[in-house]
Structures are given as C-alpha cells and as structure tokens.
Image 1 (tube, rainbow, N blue to C red):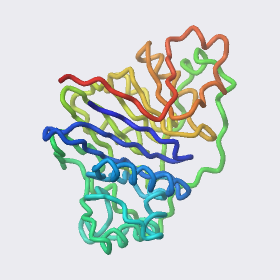
Image 2 (image 1 turned 180 degrees about the horizontal axis):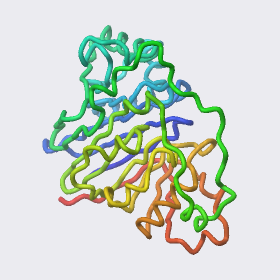
Image 3 (image 1 turned 45 degrees about the vertical axis):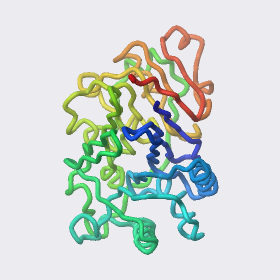
Image 4 (image 1 turned 90 degrees about the horizontal axis):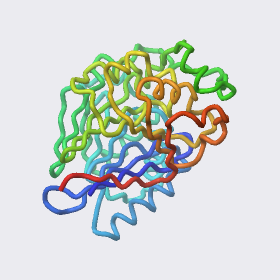
Length: 308
C-alpha cells in the first residue's frame, strides 16, 4: 500500500509518502515542511504518526527557502519533540565544510537538528537511499550548485502577470518565454522514488534543466511538478524526456500555478490527471477548456494502487 499526502501548506510544499515496507511495517517520508504557520499542523501530523506507533523515517528538505523549511523551523524553535529519525538536506557543513550555501534560516535548522541529536545526511547526485524496500535515487543537485557566490542574493520576483485570461489552446501555441534563475531553486533536491513497480519523480523547486539533467528512464507513474507549477520550471524539452500522465502541484492557488504549465502538459501528453490539495483550477477554466482531457483531483490524500 502507498499513500501520498499533499498537504495544504499555504504557499509552500509539504508532502508525505506512507507505505508498507518490506518488513511489513509502515514507513513515512516527509518531503518539505511548508511555511512557518504550517508548523502546528506539522506537529499534529507527527503526533498522529506517534499515536499509531509510527515515525518519520526520513525528512527531506529539498532546499533552503522558507516555504519549504518553515514548518520544521517553527517546531524546532518551540522545542517540539518531533519523531524524526533522520533528515536529508544539503548544508555546507555536510557537503565539504563550505557555508556559501546557507542562508540564515537554513543554518538555524541545521544547528538545531544537530543539537537535538537528529542525524543530517547530504543528498547530492549519485546518492541512493534505501528505506525498508523503497529506493530514493538522487538526481540533483551537483555539488557545484550548492556553493553560492559570496554576497550573491537570490533573485526576488518583482511581480507576476497572470495568464488565466488565455485558453488552453492559446497557451499551447505560445512559447515558454522565461526560465527560473533562483540560486536557491537551482540547489533543490530532485529524486526518484521507486516502490515495488511504481516510479515517481519529486522535484522541489528545481530548474527545468536540473530536473532533466540525470534522468535515464523518463517513464513515471507520478511527477510532482517543480516550483508550485510555475511555467518557468518546465521547458519544451520535457516532452521528449519525461513520460507521465499524473502530476501533483503543491500550492494554495494564490500565486501559482501558471495555466500555461497545464496547457503544455496537455499538448505533450494529451490526457492528464492533476492532483491538488485545494481547488484552484476553477478560477481559470473557460468553456473552451472543457473539451480538453484534463482531470483535476482535489484532496490531501492519494491512495496509489501498487502491485502486491
């Protein structure tokens, strides 16, 4: 059995993979922890796991942005005892003694985890983790993506122009004009999750080129789209490298996703399923859009059928 939880973590990401391991025990992997105000909900989720005799077997922090590490940091500051066995994250001290990667909150998370006695393991391309029958294969980042130039500030968006006034047909025909340039997103952990015969791809907020860089077999049962479904984090190269009809988008729908992202997926794959924790799609669907074969699924939990 495999459950995929896509929590409504505000403008951030928080997902959980819960599966029956080879031992017969339930295993839980949490991917990112949302914004600071999601901290209380994260604590409740962990308390439910503890009550069921389970724990967080691994917590993956894909990168340093506060909408991915905020929920954990909130709990660490309150000295909450979360049932976390280990954390996979990239920080200068676990890579090569460098600290250019770290921003202030990432330093704080790392320091507090070490003080709590929670092991922190790096996750860079080439690393593979095995957790009770499930395999996590790290595809990105390369180490060079982790070392920020001194005094370089991450790019700050100055505003977004909505594409919701366009139809899917119009957006399919338009080129993808821009690419993500955030150095924090460039350092995102991208990994394949392989459980029984299921293959899934999780992408953090990674750049499109980084997602594609080390994919060998692009056939996936499910893909978590990078950066809340931003069109800046996909590219026309996807259609020849990634083959999938099921996509998760982590967002509350206020600033993301871009409608063109979904239009391009429809153009490339024809018939797709989009999973979201809340209904943000009704805001942009037009009567003309109804003819396209996109199925939106609302809810925080997905029960994924797996071979026995």
